[in-house]
Image (cartoon, rainbow, N blue to C red; front, side, top):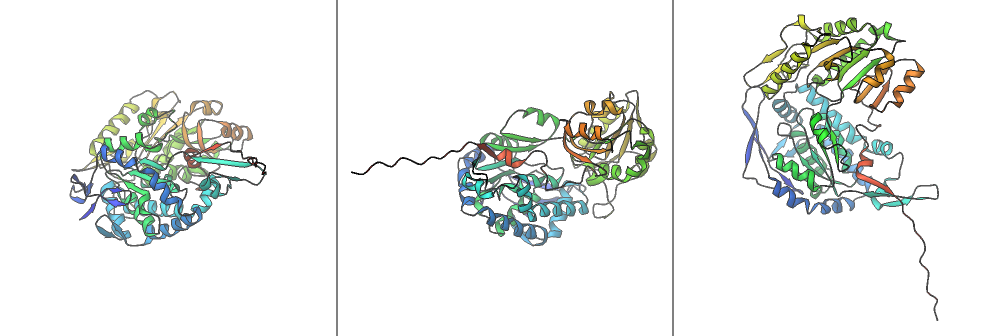
Amino acid sequence: MITLQPLRWGKPYESMEIKDVVHFDTGEPIAKFGSVGGGIVARDMKQAHKARAALLKHSTADLIAMSKKAADLFENAELPVGDSMQSVDQFVHQQSASTGLPEHMCRSNLKKNSFVLSHMDEILDCLTRGLDLDILSRGYGEEGRGVIVSYQAQTPVLGAILPNNSPGVHTLWLPAIPLQIGLALKPGSQEPWTPYRMVSAFIQAGVPAEAFGLYPGGHDAGGAIMTKTPRSMIFGSAETVAQHAGNPRVQAHGPGWSKILIGDDVVDDWELYLDVMVESVLSNSGRSCINCSGIWASRHTREIAQAIAERIGPVDVLPPTDDQAQLAAFTVPAMATGTYAMVQQDLAESGVTDMTADYGDKLIEREHCAYLRPMVVHADSPDRGVAMKEYMFPFVSVVECPQAEMLRRIGPTLVGTVLTRDPELVAAAGACVEIDRVNFGPIPTNRLNWLQPHEGNIIDFLFRSRAYQVADLPVAATA
């Protein structure tokens, strides 16, 4: 059985507090990991400057090359992870067993993380808008217009409180290393696999081990990372996001409430976009903030909801090893039962219809886990509470709303796919501050272009643009 211990700036720490990682379905232990308290984390953060100092000994170009090598190692190699050597197949099996994700989804997320690493030079070029990356290392430089520009790193390390629900989100912290910023990570208790394997790949690729801290533990460990690092990111609920709103030190990632908006000019041909809608809702078992939770149109909404229900309503639970499995388990059964209870409250409101009611039981309870099968609901107005809901399984509300009201009623929307040829709607959607990432045309909400910023630009978060002026010092006259 593999044992994962904390990593304190590259040095394994033998924790006396050992906890089990268990199989979501059988409850059997599949791994052990040591944990640390907030005191150890706070003490280590006093040495965080050494992580950046170690990275600054390598050029950004060299670290990008190491990232590309790490991508290949992460995706293909047997790597030292914890006290064992871990193959790719073992990684996939372990991640599936603890998170409830089907194994083919684990492989897909593995490739997504590898892709970002292997294209890090292109991604950073886009995120910096073509800036010479040596300017970020040095702190200033000539941009090419006869003007000195300066970017000041705001932290020696990026802290991150990592989630359990979707391994794909780890792409958000990967650029820190080639930007010469160290990492202080609190792995999720059910998904420690990606950060541990990724850190191992980085180190095997030549990145200094002292750039990395891995701190599994409780809330106090996470709290220490948040309070002791000048820049950190956290993943959680809407309440978590609200708690950190307006704090420039924290980048909070929560629900996406991603949506598809269908313009009046194309809504009569909605069948052409059915595949886009189904993929947006069902991919990755609906666990991602980029999964579509709302489809808005002015008419044909019942027909649209019924058609989606016919496609995803019959989807049932399959073993995690089945390549056709489309549903992930809730590893904490109470989360499934609680979520289902909230959905039932949504359905009780007048004007809300469960379009998947004819496709059998939705809550599937097992001894150690539970599943929620896909649901499609119809809302006859954006006034219905369900129009603003997002759940961690394939769930979508199809909302009837006049086009003229859509953009002022949709609320916060991480990804907005807008289906229209209407230039006025295109312009209005492009200017809508509620939409973070906007797609025009039949682009599923779950398909990201990694050469675009996602949920904020990490360059803007980690570096501050400032004035930097230089004048020659006068030379004293010699006698």
